[in-house]
Amino acid sequence: MKSSVIFSLLLLICVSLISAVSSSGQPPLRVGGRMTEPLEKYGMPPAPLGTYRLDTSPRMISPYGIFVSYQVNVDASGNNIVGDAANEPSIAVDPTNGNKVTIGWRQFNTYTSNFRQAGYGYTTDGGLHWTFPGVLQNNVFRSDPVLDSDDTGNFFYLSLLVDTFCGDVWRSTNGGQSWTLRSPQGGAYSGDKEWFTVDKTPSSMGHGFQYQFWTGFFACDFGEFSRSTDGGATWQSPINIPNDPNWGTLDVASNGYLFIGGNDEGSSFWCIRSTNAQNPAVTPTFDQVTTVNMGGSVVFGSTVNPDGLAGQTFLAVDRSGGPTNNNIYMVTSVQPFGANNGTDVMFVRSTDGGVTFSAPHRINDDPINHNKWHYFGTIGVAPNGRIDSVWLDTRNAANNTDSQLFYSYSTDGGVTWAPNVAVSSSFTPLEGWPQQNKIGDYITVVSDNTGGDVAYSATFNFNPNRGQHEQDVYFVRVSPTGGPTPTPTATATPTATATPTATATATATATGTATATPTATSTATATATPRPTPSPRSQPAPRPRPTPLPRP
Image (cartoon, rainbow, N blue to C red; front, top):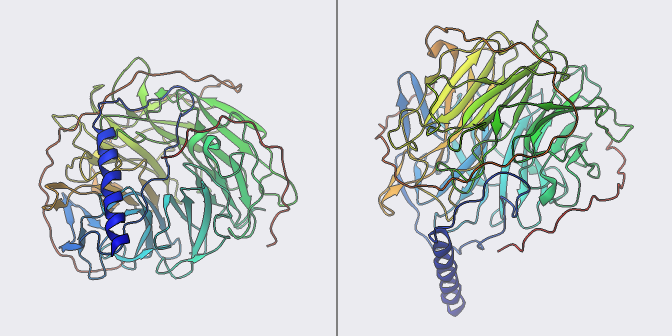
């Protein structure tokens, strides 16, 4: 009993200290050079059972026009868990059965703590109903969930252990209903803001290989890249990527070539290629580095997401087999050159294997207003070559912070884009913070031939105990048939860009404001109508890197 009282007192002191720091008026860190601290860092220990009360309310079903968002992080009875928080969702869809979808997210069991675990949920009816069995491991501090599938329908979950920056891979063979540890605990190397992809092309030499890329400045060991040739069970010792890119993603072309998109935490972006990562007999090398103009700089610390990113660099490759096959696409939410506020969702494409890229094209089609935020921009490419893009958007908010999920698509390889369509009700991103002033760092979409499955965080549910809305994870289906007839706007034709390393460009600092009044949403009920051997480990010499600040 005494130990329980002491722990509660310590927990209260920690909460008070963190609250004092967050209210001290210090501006958030912005872009322009290396981060001085990791985006993920160890915080509070898990609270003992009974520390907080678990109330429930009906799960949120939020319709907006013909689009309906379904809450994912629900309890065993399908109800909302009052007092928790969930954000940073990553989605995977079974390519053999689109009704089977799984989402992973950062699960905070109580908003009074920043201790987070690897939450997951699954659906068997195309997203109408969700089951949240729990977390990968109870009371293990995890973050940065990234999910993917192979071409046979196995799901994989890459999770970061925050106290060590080491990651591990989990596998589900039953549609995300249960997960088993595929690699050793922390045995997938990894680092802050890690991402991975699976080679899904049967004709590729690297079919089934997994490739992982992370921010090397805050890494488990060293380097920024690793490969698994046995479905995530074992991982090659890390190696360095040219230019040390950060905050990006990677994808594989139909010929097995690997492409990585990343940035320097500023205005420099790169598309980096490896043609031999698919060869298990060699240590991967990177033979092409292309500097890409995205039209601005990435942002960390914005009015809509003060302690997080406004977006990462998302790279996707077309594997349709048609006229746009092996086109490479990159999307990033950037602060435009010359602006000191706001972000736009910018798109570029390469039709020549990443040698050159088009001029940046602004996907969000509202009038230019640098007080508006178009953040968490991401893309998915369908098997038929259609490109889907979704993002959070403040264009309709008088306070420039209330947000809606928006959607656009292209059916001609990104040359023209359909008019933007809002697909969610308005919500505030400035409430529900679980001792961490952000709503995550990304959202995700997976596209098929008729539409896209989207996982995003929003604050539709109201928590009466706290007097504000809470962060939850939602699923929504988007498709071209849900929007108006496109009025194409052309992008520039590809132009050659230089390949040497570029230096970072700093941008100005923005200070967050927390004045948001969300729009009420309605709740309804729905009835379901479904629709080899590991590579040898080499030991490269670790690259010197600055020592991070001590973790709190």
